[in-house]
Length: 402
Ligand SMILES: [Zn+2]
Image 1 (cartoon, rainbow, N blue to C red):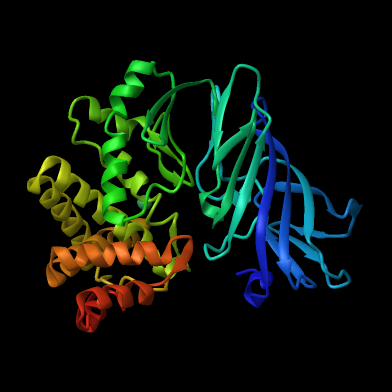
Image 2 (tube, rainbow, N blue to C red):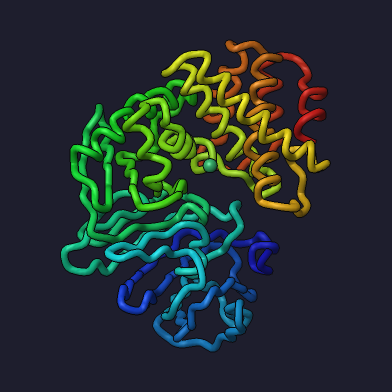
């Protein structure tokens, strides 16, 4: 945790980011302007992953900074009421960007290609400007304001920031007051339409279950080669290996459904710290099963739960069946996912049975409405569900969550 955030006495209002990708050497030139409010006379530490910081400016004046291998330190102790810091940098991020022939996109770790706070509880607005090579297309967070510029004015966690630039085909479909974009690399418009044709139905289902209209005017699905499955604010990056099976079997839709569900659970309501990550992922795996139950029938729901049980069993067999809020280190990514994703979904299935459908879904709506645009922890969810259930849910939460 960076020292700046730990003091908790300032608010990051906005990041304004410029990115100029160089496909020839897989590097970037860029800048981040961070706007803050509150008491800012302190030391800021930002993580660095391969970028070289060229300058740090306040009010157009360069100020000193130190740059160690993996940390940028800016000391503002001698400045009063700093409202914005402008940082210029260049280089090859060691992670966070995936380069292909004719495209580049962000996957995890935005703080590798911009300067930012990594803690999910730090929510801020973001503006992204991309220098797009001739003939290429792009997408990024929020609404496109002019050519090459995007803006998301509402506050989201930094891990949801991202963009994609490439020789893309873009298909746009409009539903009532909402636009869906299907963006593909080496895909015909017909192929894209076929693969993403259930998008409106998925949006409508989650609007109904959450009680909250999809919180943006446009949602883009970017189809890239390989195994990607990554939600961003306002768009998702999806791999052909996960999406293409839809063509043979339309019920092979989990990746579309899962990443769209995150636009509510994960993006709109975000875990305050990674110890409560199951609130993002367990809920989304469960919501994917609930969508499938509605779209494809009870057997599809049961199949998802069987899969979750099998995966959870792997953690039990490894003698690592920890509570959902386990704060320590997991022996492997597979075991971590078995708990956070699979056990999380199984808990919600158990809670649904304990409360009954009517009260359970009322609780989900109340929770989503109450905490939209906020950071959440397990207690927040428990209290809202208890209120909906009108009884103590301590035993079931103690059994699964704590
Ligand atoms: Zn997910």
